[in-house]
Image (cartoon, protein in one colour):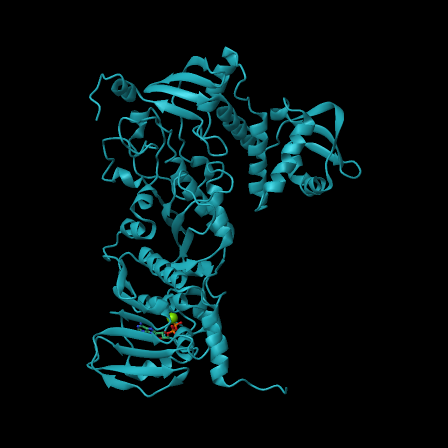
Length: 588
Ligand code: ADP
Ligand code: MG
C-alpha cells in the first residue's frame, strides 16, 4: 500500500483511543472540564453502563456560542496559550483533546450558556461530524450528552468489561473526585438510581464513608502534614485494616488522580514492619505542590506525572504517613466488658479529644488523650514534613518486672495496670531497632575464628551473589568460593548467637520472597527476617537479668508495640478493666 495521510476522521479515532478507553474515561474528562469551569454542582447520569448515555450537567462558566465549534476541535483549549504555560498548569485539562475525541466516537451534544449570555446554544457532533450550532434556551452552565459511545468503532465495544465492572469503575471514579473536591456537590445516577450524592459541604470524611462504607471509613487515620513545597492530606488505614493488593491506594496530585508506582511504594514503606508481609494499606492521599514542581503532560489521560524532585515528594509522603501511623498504633487492650473497639487507645476513652470525634481516629497533630488512660506517653507535637528524627514516639511507660510465665511471656506492671509481653516478639523488635540504628554507620560485625563454608543450591546462590553488596553493609563478610559455595568470614555482632550457615540461609529465603526489590526495602526486610531468627524463642527460660534487660530495651524502642512483622508485642490490662472484671465497678 502506498503511504497516505489518514483522513481526519480516522486520525481522530486513533487519537481518541488514547483518551477514551471506556465509559469511565469519558466521565473523567467531562468531570474535569466541569471542575475547570468552576462548577460547584456537577450531576452525572449514566445509562446502560455508559454505552447508551453519559450526561453531565454543571453550573460552571459555560461556553459562548461563538466558541462552541472550537470546543470540539482538536487542540483547541481555553486553558493554555503558549508552550511556556505547560510548566505551570493549574487546570485539570490543557490538551484540548477530550471533547474532540469523545465527539469522534459517539453522538455528542453540548448545550451551554455563560451566565452573562441571554441565550444558550446547542451543538451536535456525530461520529466526528460537527453540525451547526443553534441558539436555545438553557440554564447557566453546561450540559454534555454522550450517546451511543463507540457506535462507530465496534471493536472498542468488544473490549469493554461486563456492565457491572464498567459501572463500578464509574462509581469509583466519581467518588474519588467527590473526595478530592468535597466543596463541590456531586450527584451520580446510574440506570435511574442515585449511586452517589455528596453535600458539597467540604467534609471529606462524609465522602469517605461512601467510598469504603461507614465502618471502614471510621477506622481510617487522618494524615495531615505540610511544609513549604508540599502538603500531604488525606486518609490511610490503621495496621489492622489491610488488603492483599495495592488496589485501594489512591493519590491525587494538585486535584488530579494519579497512578504512580513509586508513590505507592513510598506509602507502603511507611508501614514497614507494621504490616504482615503481603498485606497493603488502603489510602486516599491528596498532595499539593506548586504546579511547576510537577509535569503532568507525560500521559494522554494525564494519569502519570513526573516530579521535579521525586525524592522530596516520596520522602514527604513516607514521613507524613509514618508519623500519622505511629501516633495511632495502639497497644491492644483486652476489653470484653466494654463493648468497644478492641484496638482502642484513641477511641476507647469516654472523653472525646479536642473536638475530634474519637471514632474517626486522630490526625497526628491532634492531642490524643491516651497518655493517661493507657499509661502510654507520646509526643504529639505537630511536625511539618521534616526530618525523620522528629517522629513522634509511641513509648511504653516504665515497667516494673513481675516475672516470666509459660516460659514465653513477661509480666510487668505499668502506671495503669498490667502488661503481658511476648518475649519473642519483643526481642525481635529490640534487635530490629538496634540493627536499624547501626545501619547508618557501620554495623558491628564479628569475625569468625575459622571462616565457614556454606553451600547453596544454584538459584539461591545466584540470589545471594547479586546481593553481596547489601549483605556487606549489614555486617556480613561473605565471599564467593566456587560454584554455589560461599565463605563466611564474619557476621553481624547482633547475630553472633546464630550459626553462620543458618544466618546466611535466612538471607537467601528473604530474597526469594521479595517481590519489590528496592534497595532500602530489601535491606529492612532482611533485617526483620534475620532478627526473627536471632530473637529468643517462646519456650526459652530467661534469667531475671535477661528479662529485665529485655524490658529496658523494649522501653527504649521507637515502636515498641509491634514486632517488625506487625504483630503486637504486648497486651495491656488496665486497672479499670481489672476493676470491672472483679465487679468493683459497675459493668457498662
Ligand atoms: P481541555 O479541557 O484540555 O481544554 P477539552 O476538549 O476537554 O479540552 O475542552 C475544550 C474546551 O471546551 C475547554 O478548554 C473549555 O474552554 C471548554 N469546555 C469544555 N467543557 C466545558 C464545561 N463543562 N464548561 C465550560 N467550558 C467547557
Ligand atoms: Mg478537558
